[in-house]
Image (cartoon, rainbow, N blue to C red):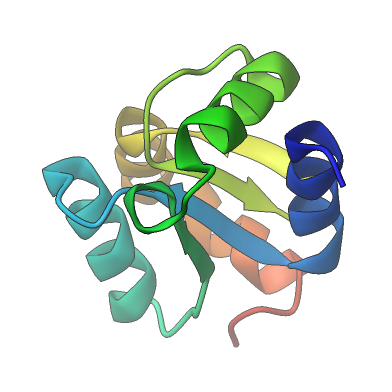
Length: 104
Protein backbone atom coordinates (compact mmCIF):
# COMPACT_ATOMS: atom_id res chain seq x y z
CA UNK A 1 0.00 0.00 0.00
CA UNK A 2 1.38 3.42 -0.89
CA UNK A 3 1.74 6.12 1.73
CA UNK A 4 -1.00 8.12 0.00
CA UNK A 5 -3.36 5.14 0.24
CA UNK A 6 -2.29 4.64 3.86
CA UNK A 7 -3.01 8.30 4.68
CA UNK A 8 -6.43 8.16 3.04
CA UNK A 9 -7.23 4.94 4.91
CA UNK A 10 -6.20 6.48 8.24
CA UNK A 11 -8.47 9.46 7.58
CA UNK A 12 -11.44 7.28 6.66
CA UNK A 13 -10.92 4.69 9.41
CA UNK A 14 -10.66 7.07 12.37
CA UNK A 15 -13.32 9.55 13.45
CA UNK A 16 -10.69 11.67 15.19
CA UNK A 17 -7.21 11.46 13.71
CA UNK A 18 -4.15 13.41 14.80
CA UNK A 19 -0.97 13.15 12.76
CA UNK A 20 1.79 14.06 15.19
CA UNK A 21 5.44 13.88 16.13
CA UNK A 22 6.15 12.76 19.68
CA UNK A 23 8.60 15.60 20.40
CA UNK A 24 6.45 18.42 18.95
CA UNK A 25 5.18 20.98 21.53
CA UNK A 26 2.22 21.93 19.30
CA UNK A 27 1.22 18.26 19.14
CA UNK A 28 1.44 17.98 22.93
CA UNK A 29 -0.89 21.00 23.12
CA UNK A 30 -3.35 19.37 20.72
CA UNK A 31 -3.35 16.11 22.65
CA UNK A 32 -4.01 18.04 25.88
CA UNK A 33 -6.92 19.93 24.32
CA UNK A 34 -8.57 16.70 23.22
CA UNK A 35 -7.88 15.05 26.59
CA UNK A 36 -9.45 18.03 28.36
CA UNK A 37 -12.53 17.61 26.14
CA UNK A 38 -12.60 13.85 26.85
CA UNK A 39 -12.00 13.05 23.20
CA UNK A 40 -9.53 10.33 22.22
CA UNK A 41 -7.83 10.87 18.88
CA UNK A 42 -6.12 8.09 17.02
CA UNK A 43 -2.57 9.46 17.03
CA UNK A 44 -0.05 8.64 14.32
CA UNK A 45 3.46 9.55 15.52
CA UNK A 46 5.34 10.15 12.28
CA UNK A 47 8.74 10.17 14.00
CA UNK A 48 8.13 6.62 15.26
CA UNK A 49 7.41 5.18 11.79
CA UNK A 50 9.96 3.93 9.27
CA UNK A 51 7.96 5.65 6.51
CA UNK A 52 7.03 8.72 8.57
CA UNK A 53 8.65 11.20 6.17
CA UNK A 54 6.83 9.68 3.20
CA UNK A 55 3.56 9.54 5.13
CA UNK A 56 3.93 13.22 6.06
CA UNK A 57 4.41 13.98 2.35
CA UNK A 58 1.22 12.04 1.60
CA UNK A 59 -0.73 14.11 4.13
CA UNK A 60 0.80 17.23 2.56
CA UNK A 61 -0.57 16.19 -0.83
CA UNK A 62 -4.04 15.76 0.72
CA UNK A 63 -4.13 18.89 2.90
CA UNK A 64 -1.45 21.28 1.62
CA UNK A 65 -0.24 21.33 5.24
CA UNK A 66 3.32 20.23 5.95
CA UNK A 67 3.24 20.78 9.72
CA UNK A 68 1.96 18.77 12.65
CA UNK A 69 -0.38 18.33 14.32
CA UNK A 70 -2.56 17.62 11.35
CA UNK A 71 -6.08 16.89 12.62
CA UNK A 72 -9.16 15.35 11.02
CA UNK A 73 -12.66 14.95 12.46
CA UNK A 74 -14.86 12.49 10.53
CA UNK A 75 -12.67 13.00 7.48
CA UNK A 76 -12.82 16.81 7.66
CA UNK A 77 -9.40 18.43 7.77
CA UNK A 78 -9.32 20.69 10.84
CA UNK A 79 -5.75 21.91 10.52
CA UNK A 80 -2.92 22.48 12.93
CA UNK A 81 -2.37 23.80 16.46
CA UNK A 82 -3.44 27.35 15.58
CA UNK A 83 -6.67 26.04 14.07
CA UNK A 84 -7.33 23.85 17.12
CA UNK A 85 -6.80 26.86 19.42
CA UNK A 86 -9.09 29.08 17.32
CA UNK A 87 -11.84 26.45 17.17
CA UNK A 88 -11.50 25.78 20.90
CA UNK A 89 -11.75 29.48 21.72
CA UNK A 90 -14.88 30.07 19.66
CA UNK A 91 -16.59 26.84 20.78
CA UNK A 92 -16.59 25.21 17.35
CA UNK A 93 -14.18 22.42 18.29
CA UNK A 94 -16.52 21.11 20.98
CA UNK A 95 -19.46 21.47 18.58
CA UNK A 96 -17.66 19.49 15.86
CA UNK A 97 -16.74 16.76 18.34
CA UNK A 98 -20.30 16.58 19.66
CA UNK A 99 -21.77 16.50 16.16
CA UNK A 100 -19.41 13.63 15.34
CA UNK A 101 -20.57 11.84 18.53
CA UNK A 102 -17.02 11.85 19.87
CA UNK A 103 -17.92 13.62 23.11
CA UNK A 104 -21.10 14.34 25.04
